[in-house]
Image (cartoon, rainbow over all chains, first blue to last red; front, top):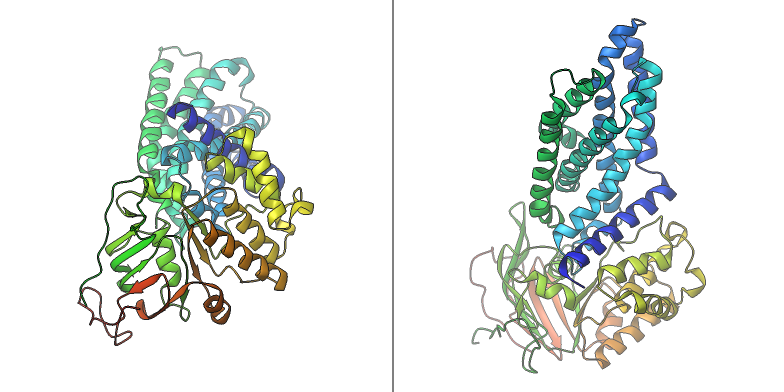
Length: 229
Length: 260
């Protein structure tokens, strides 16, 4: 087995374990799905019944709900692993840190996509945004945004998981770092809905892809620090 | 007493003179407070040695450094002649740790927990199921193989964590309070496993408060207090004993003591 194949096998094993545990325990994603739905509802009420205003705010609120609930889900997924010392033990197996990181990213990505699957229909229903008309393009934007959020969120969740104030520190540290992702994802979604009149979509998608790549590389190199005390 | 000789070897098969574990002036600080304050010792390969001492003596810290979970603040620690701080990737395939927390996943079954560990240990998939079944049988959990760990008692969790060690063939086994939460049958199981590891040439370090049990069953013992070695006894272990426990600050030379 080549080193790359072995890394991928390790990563899928870790992601599979995370998904199985989450599907059975429903400790992290289920509660954050509820938070995402409540966030959308509250903003919907706050903006009032003006359908134009709701439609204009739709892309921003969609991503705000995904980012806020996603940060909580990623933090919770990591925290669960520390409860009986499993996180420390994970670092003692003879496997590369990058493979462990990739596995945790894949697990986090599944959580992000689950959030997206809830938030998109809510955006359609609550804000009257016709997302279904741009479904293929939206799928690309949501996938790229979710990969970036999972990549950077996994890294920061790992780095803060042993800290007492992790619930406060994780969003505090992470939100400034995800600002470029949020800007690109919201802009790409808005441009997509407007029919891309100025041909900006490709640039926003490139920014998202570049962000994803940079965060995956940074995480692969530095995640080992999270596994050491 | 001359300073303890540390055998430094590149990764590979150690020769018979290479100690299973060797530390020199090993220290670890937590927020400037020393958990280990300069420990120098050698454990012969294939010997089982108890780490004794009160809570906070540094037993767990020593085990975690040897397991590569913690980096030393000062000093060196070698396993089979390999430096744990500079070559952790070479050490990890050789060690197995039973931590005080068991490191199990509550939402997975007993068999799934072991299969996950076996996969990360690099055990080929055709062998994995057999190894998992064998380990579960050995620790008496075959009947609970499909039960979620969240339903296990503390003793069953301890047994399952011991089963995880049995999946591989480590050169060094590090056990942190292996008798904790176990009934008489479980404690007897630990004794049998210790005997098996000794018979197979595996070096074993056991941090425990069950002093009488450990001293009568293991080759030797090391007593730690305030992060220092204050007593070394039995066979298979040598160490530099601090004459004034708790008085030596980190970074200063400790007075030489006896070697057993």
